[in-house]
Image (cartoon, rainbow, N blue to C red; front, side, top):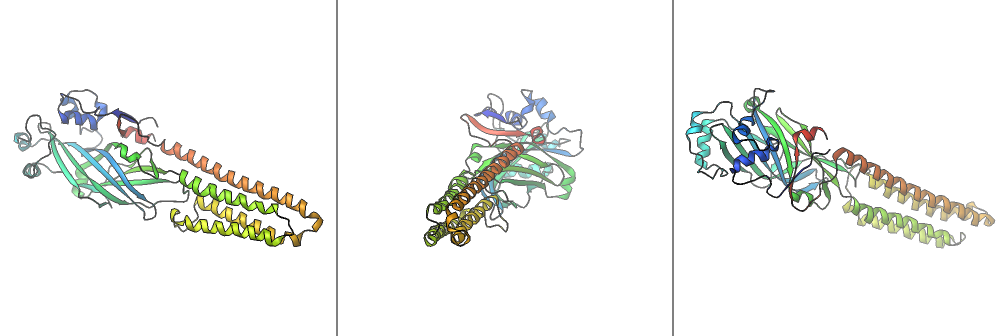
Length: 387
């Protein structure tokens, strides 16, 4: 996917153009430097549907929390919804909506009341979302002569999201925003088009997650779904859990340096290592998801426990199973088998991790990275469908 549009600071707001004239190009950047009249005329035009087209630009300020344990995420976002009325009411053109040069000022309460008496405003919301902070609704009359209006709600929302953790700690999660029209009459009257999704740099500061390319899952109808895709940063778990368990497993093989007939000494070292691994598992349990199935990380931890248990079992019975003259040879062969098995198992786990990561990156694209002078990352509608 090559559609990552990167603009420098304030590149979309230029003087001496009117702020809203520039804002229309900001929401619909493919219009280029056309005249204000031509830009306004194209907004809302559609040959595919007789309904009024609502063009949506979604800005993501920050993803405050992603909690797979509780199955929800919290997001701070803002919508820009622009539409053009099919016919312009006379009352809309006679009202003084703003002073010259103040076109970016939102409507007052009295102006909004007057606007509602002139036209029908769409009723939309994020389905199943709980408002964490008070939602602010701002309305603008972009161009009264052409009947172009803008509604811009913004706030912080908590959204439920079932999350699959089978591949933890290299899992990818879909954070779904469901934008819906919650009036049956309005559903027949308006048609939602998601033109772009935009991420601000704060979305790249999550300590445990990388932000990846978004995806438009469903558009139009009663509910429009936008998937914000995040991948977990796995380095912490690989270095602090997997590598430590590998070292503990490797250390358990030092029992082969003790004479095979010293069963007590061998078992003492083996069981001490096993108990250390169990204590380590209790220490890290808060970092692991409490799910009803084994994750990819659990597979390695269980494999390491099985390996150390087999080592302890061998040390306890090798003296009884083997003739004294064959103990040294048996130890060498068994040590080679155990060491090779541990290396092969660890390599299998890491190769599987790399293959899964490569497949994930191929599916969602590279993680977004903060860059100097870049104020936002934008994905346009055409780029969604190519992802």
